[in-house]
Length: 76
Image (cartoon, rainbow, N blue to C red; front, side, top):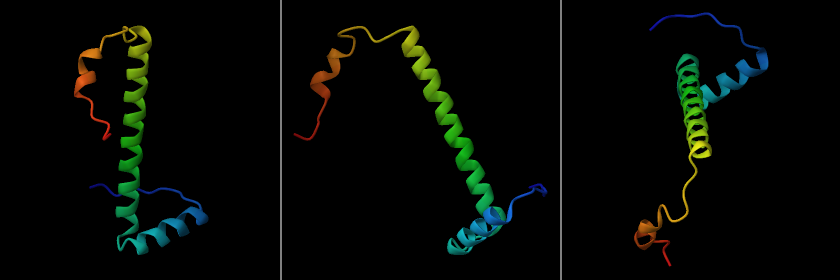
């Protein structure tokens, strides 16, 4: 791991410290987890945008997935 230096405002630092204590973890560990979570959320947003673009370019044809209708179970 690398040690970095960053600037953070007092309000946000207090929240990070409060949440770190509540989770019984360190400030650094808390921030690492938060960064990983945001990176994952961004990846999901990008993937969803690619899917939407793909369906916009090639929309689902009527009846294309009808073969799966008998496989669906909605718990009724």
